[in-house]
Image (cartoon, rainbow, N blue to C red):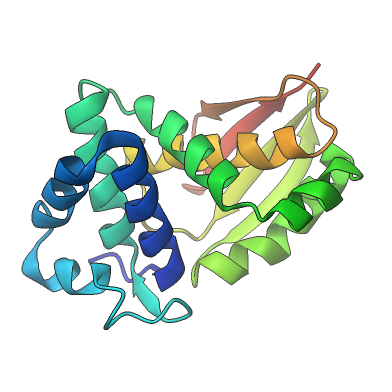
Length: 185
């Protein structure tokens, strides 16, 4: 286990999305694909929405869906991250985002990240004329997690005033930090 934790509501929201988008059988099979230790964190009766759960629970479910519905291609996780994030952005928050600029959303990313995850620092900077998001000190790094996060970032940017945003996974930094290039226009 990585020692990284997400809030419990992220798992609950992901499972609701999987159930709605891919059906009850996929949602059930995704939970069953987890180890018994991780499976306990999928039950909303015993897992608090504001409690911390191992990030492997969340990304284990994403990995199962990628394997079943995206032919195992990690880039399919971008669709999941994008759709789950759009689904979860409350309508009032979505309205507020429409009055923000992409730079404002990216500036808030650092604070927002810590609301969802207990590890890592999300930073935004400009490099060679494009925006770059960097996630430092985040020990859970898989192709699926990198792509799922890219999809979520795209959803937030799209809900702001960004025009046709794209978020591309780029090579990790020299210190092992995860990185994404933001392209809009």
